[in-house]
Amino acid sequence: MGRRRLPLIVNPNTFGQTMEKTEIPLLEMKGISKDFFGNQVLNDINFTLHKGEILGLVGENGAGKSTLMKILFGMEDIIQTGGYGGDVLIDGKKVNFKSSEDALHAGIGMVHQEFSLLPDFTVAENILLNREPEKYSVMSELFGKRLNTVDRAEMQRRAIKAISKLGVDLDENKVIKNLPVGYKQFTEIARELSKEDDNRGNGTSSIRLLVLDEPTAVLSEKEAETLLRAMKALSKEGIAIIFISHRLQEIKDVCDSIMVMRDGLIIKKVSNAEANVTDIASWMVGRSVSTSRVERNVDVRTEEDILKVENLKVIMPGEMVRNVSFAVKKGEIFGIGGLAGQGKIGIPNGIMGLYQAAGKVIFEGKEVKLNSPRVPLDEGMAFVSEDRRGVGLLLGESLEWNVAFSAMQIKDKFLKKIGPIKFRDQAAIEKVTEEYVKLLEIKCTSTKQKAKELSGGNQQKICLAKAFALTPKLLFVSEPTRGIDVGAKALVLSALRRYNEEHGVTIVMVSSELEELRSICDRIAIVQDGMVADILDAKRPSSDFGMLMVSSVKKEEGSR
Image (cartoon, rainbow, N blue to C red; front, side, top):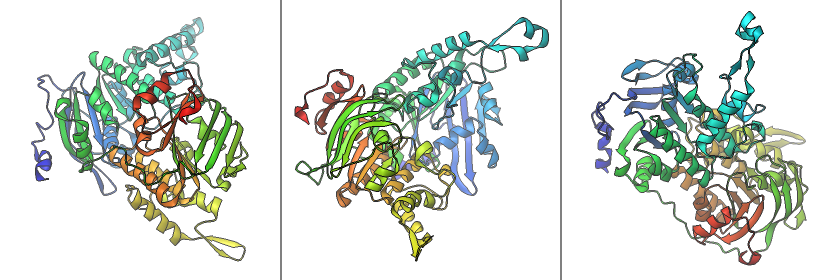
């Protein structure tokens, strides 16, 4: 065990320089440290990055990755909390970015884990936001550039060019709020790529360094492959990339070097050839991690159907459900997979009343009224949304309030009653929150901490805790491990399995990661073009599911 800790005392001036390069690094971070109100989150971080290099930055949620990138990008919350220690050097020269605009002027772009798009603007308008090409006129020549108008044709051209670098089918005229989560992510990335040829002469350098913070978390495997190809192409053009991802195989597939962080320290920085996925996972969490399938302790094949969905249609922009039918056994873990935009996300959103739906949903032998969010909750269903910030959390409230609020409203839990008067049972709320913090290993300062202050992965765990607190009979979970590191992913999947087996709760799990579904589910439905292509036993080979995802032919019902 001691030998694994040796890298922590390596000379910081040479630490991590695994590639034989003699030129001045594009980026060097020396002795970086940061604390938030006495809580040390970064400690003596030293590394270099060269032109055209793709660096894979990995670590558990809360390891300090995002904070380190916020320092590089001059983010406001770093400045407002006392700044940081150490030096940031670009081309060998010390810089001190006071804002993100300073970083942009230096040619650094960043795609954040959470979206920063204007929902009522189009894709093209978001991509060129604050960098809109202008059209001159006689009036502007006479009275100044304030009378310039937006050159819509040039905006379209630049947006299309940026999107083409990603190789995705993204309509530049679509309004952002009508897009599924995956396509919003592509818009964010395209916005940064569009800066590569931004030569308006406003002092902004062409993009030289691109930071991608969990860009594939909301993408299907096929879409992620498209993005990785685009990253390699950008690298060949000399653009350096810092790629943060919990999908470790992606790190291996695309990166030149890999840097592992844990508890605010650099544990390892090695070349790609010096590590495999198992090594990276164990460095991240300090223990071996298994993601293989664990055999189930229950057999639900003879159980009665608890949920029947017949001819379901859901109007969810980007995730339209056209005609879906399936049945779920009581006590089953039922998976729903498929490529982004094919309709899988729309199924739980429609059943739970978040989007307009038609068809028939029968739960425990009783038809459930659609388009009324309170009804399925009253019947004993719960939902963990894929949109944790927009739907799942009360960001400005404490962890206690987030965990207990829905259960108080729906189930009258965590309340004291004196006659007709109800009071909040604070002791019960604190107890249940502490239990889930321990169960899901949520990294927080206390249960009083606000949800918005947690890392993305820990916010996702709070969403799960909130659903568990409802003690539902059936739980829909949509992308439950999005943005969660490999160690926490195994923990969350184990918690779902244990919750199912110990409490008899039926789980319907929607995920873009096929192997994640195969590791936990009994059966998996693949959704293609808004319909169920087939439902297969989870033990079937991956290739069988892959064929369904790209096939337009609906299979026979026999394998259900």
